[in-house]
Image 1 (cartoon, rainbow, N blue to C red):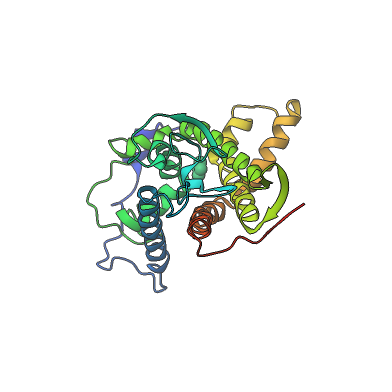
Image 2: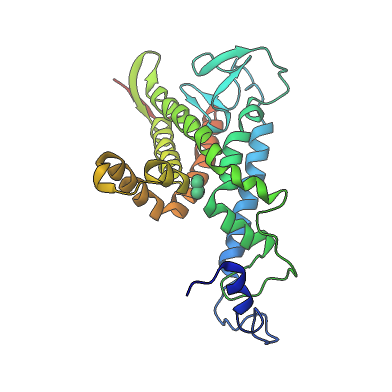
Length: 275
Ligand code: FES
C-alpha cells in the first residue's frame, strides 16, 4: 500500500520533538563550527567591502591600487570602465570615476556564492541558527524554508552558475596574462598566485551541485552517454570536496587581492623572472 504525502504526515506519530527542556543533549563543542564560520564570513564581507570601495590611484603612478603590472586583482575583473589598466581591460566605458569598477561585477560572484548549497547550509546555521547544528533545537517558532522572499531567491542558483562560469573563464585569462611581461613570458610570485586563484575558482565552480545536474541530470542510461558520464564523474569528485573548494577559493581571493595591493603600493617587490 502506498501513502501520499499528506497521509504520511498525518500518520507521523507524536510531536515533532521529544519533550525535553534542554536545547540539546549534545555534550561536544557543537557551537564551535558555526562560530568559526560566522567569524570567517564576517571577516570576508568586511574585507571585500573595503577592497571594493578602496581603489585610489597610487601616488606617483598612473595606475590604480588593484593593478600591479601584469597582475589584476580578482575583485576588479573583468575591468571594463574608463581608468581600468589598458593591459587588462575589456573596454573603456565612460563611467563615473568615483564608482569602483568592482561594484559593476561583484553582483555575479555574490549571487553565485550566496545561493550555493554549501554556503546556504553554513550561513543558515551560523547566522540564522536554523538549526545551529545537528540535534540542536533552533530558536525559531516557525519555518517557511525557501518559499518566501528573500530566501526564495536562492532558486536562481542554476542561472548564477552560468554567470560564474564566465567569470571563472575571465579569471583564468587573467592568470594567463599574469605570465605576460610586456610581451615576454615570465613567472613571478603574482603569476603563481593568480594561477592558483584560477584553479581554485574553477574547482569550486565546476564542483557545483548544479553542474552535476547539467552534466548528467535526467539521463536514464550512463552507458549510452559515456562522455557525459565521464564529465559527471569528474564533477562529482570535485563536488565531494565542495566545502573545501568553497573556503579555499574564498580565502585565496583575499590573498591575491592583498598581494597585488601591496606590490602596487610598493610595500612588496614582486620577485619574477622573464625568459
Ligand atoms: S552548490 Fe555550491 S556553487 Fe553550486
